[in-house]
Image (tube, rainbow, N blue to C red; front, side):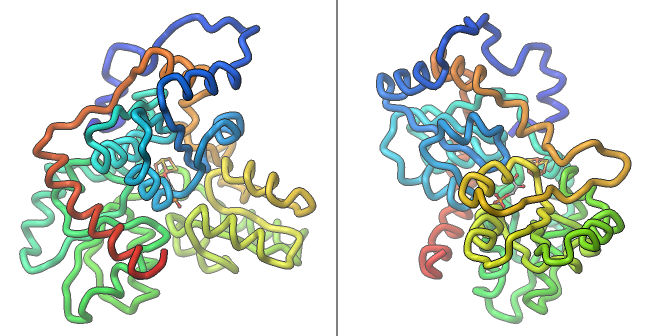
Length: 333
Ligand code: 13P
Ligand code: SF4
């Protein structure tokens, strides 16, 4: 439930600060600890390559939630950010959920403080609240249905056409869903710091150099970027599109970590990270990249930092997440 601001203010390191012998084979050590403790490592595609390579499951937010809900491991090491680990804890409250660096937050989740969202929601008493999974547990507890980038359109479409809807916290995903479904959504004005930095001019120039390249974009990008895209989807959607496509070149407008898996699955194809504007040097998410292989090893060894949530928040937040999982299962997503 902590926002990045609060996490930053905590005057302690966000991870077990311990010397790690550089001669240790961390892959071996992590494998041993995993077996010994019956732990599973779930990693998002935006994690560094080493972490993706040691993970038991890599996926987008929907896939990771589905895995967290069904795992029989005693410990879930969540290599992702705080809201993702919280979601795993909500779905598996009796399990120990660890996050390699507890300060791995999310600018999008931070853009929607729960006390302000509560006031916003009060202005629309006859609206149903759909929240993108990239938000705090407290926000989920105020929602009717949670969604991810891979099911947001279908979840809105599953509701009666006259149902009024508030969508938050991502205004870009919300605007994309409104356009795809033709529905008039009331949007919260939040955004992701990584997906807002792409330069339309630079992507257009790149396309001149690579005229055959397909442009793949995440729906958290602004409308001006989405207009250029040949395909719009979640990280898993983007990866699957690139793998199935006969095209050989791709310009990828999302966090750069996804390129690791794209190159691994398609070594013969060329993937180019979409260029950011002049205010940024790269497309890395500073929150996702707080996790490292060393921190993952220490977190599994010391079983901390651990995600804990009040029981009343878990009890309320689990309902909209389960509703999302049920709708996704019915739709075969
Ligand atoms: P997906 O992997 O679900 O597309 O989410 C992207 C994201 O921004 C996660 O922080
Ligand atoms: Fe949050 Fe954006 Fe980073 Fe995803 S990429 S964790 S939405 S800041």
